[in-house]
Length: 284
Length: 123
Length: 218
Image (cartoon, rainbow over all chains, first blue to last red):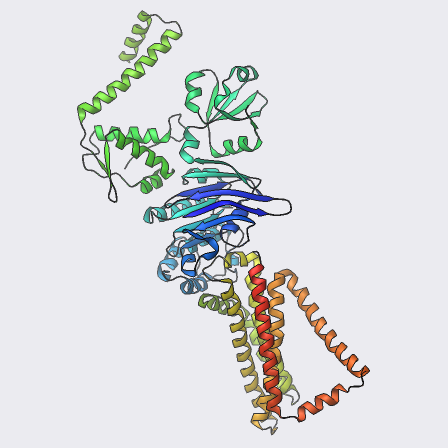
């Protein structure tokens, strides 16, 4: 569905170099700190910026060769931009009608009303949460096979985030062929919906793993200096100096659970893994 | 389908799903030819990744509890009670073996282990 | 492209106040007989500028980034701006024309209709040329820098005019006499020349804007 092959984009102070593959029916998450390259990646995919190397394929075509019909199958949410804020929902539905062949005005307006969005007020009067909901509803208002979502839940409280993710889950359960690439700072959101996670730092993918492996097979070992000395480091990916000793990341939780009864082994999550992957040292 | 998972347990989520479904099959809450929810809809209910659900479904099929018909869904297979019981008996055996080994490791004698077992069974 | 048209029309709804004031001012100037041509020119030029305001509204709050992800090609965006620009200029000009006829009727000014229309057409053509220059400037420099760029463009135009005039007088050529001669030439001939120049200017402007859009990063 979407394939990035060694995509490269060079700026003065920063360089993006990454590869990704997303197949039909897959939901992939992209996480990284600010400035790591998430938005650059999205802009490259959407042909908003040119790339200096590599290829991007969407629907098995080069991304520059997509026809308008192909583009109708893509839904987009970007974090700092959307439809002109001088417009209201009625205006937008009239515009969307002319852009998308399978857009249903009644359905869209219905959804907006269900989410409590006023139809006749200009978007610049909406709250952050309302703007975010509208962006998703717009992206889902026509039949899409690929959703590109850049921080769709940014600035939302936990209740709104849950509602928004439910909208996505509903859509996916009715359109099993659809694929999603979404980025977020909020890793709990990604954990509750994504099938696999890409971690990006300084323009490079530092980790790509299935979510359930990340949550069940990865673990953080918290050990003292002495324990660290005698620890079998065969399966330690990275480690970090702590006040109590070291924290170590492993992909083989069971090995350490079986063989080390007296060290602290914590379940991992995306945030912990990301911290150690970025700040930690390679275990020798 | 009423499955409850513990997000902060040491037991991987896919294992929890497998256990829940197995229990439901044995208790006949899920009968033969009942259809399991689709991967996407269960992942939506439980708010987890679809791959996790798929993993659980694949293992259930490998172990003979379910069968997937492409394009139609995943169905519960005829619950072979004896077979299931055998499987579970084997698991209990393995768990007991581990417990006994552990006990021996910390120096308990066979008598002490038996006593402990009887005490626990009375509770 | 239809989607883009609908979007711009919806955006222009926001300029309702501006348009009303325009019409009001144009109407007011009809009171004087010398104000007729002013009001017509004013209406045409300001109406033509509306397309520039749609470009700046597109750009508001980084809106172009999202806009460019919608299902249309960059050339559709450029085409739509030029087509709509010409249509709005034409409309504003027609309204101005009607108003000028009303004004002439009020002040009892006898002017042969065809002659008046021909000289009015020149106003439209010059307005179109101005917009042709401003569209690529607005697209290239985006919302913030465009205002400054527009002022610079006007300054350059005036400068060019001034330089031509100075050089001409140095060479002993009398520009005013030349212009007088032109007005004695067949009116339709002059208008046709200017039409040709306008078409060329619009064409070059279109190509330049296409090039800018193709290179632009959002």
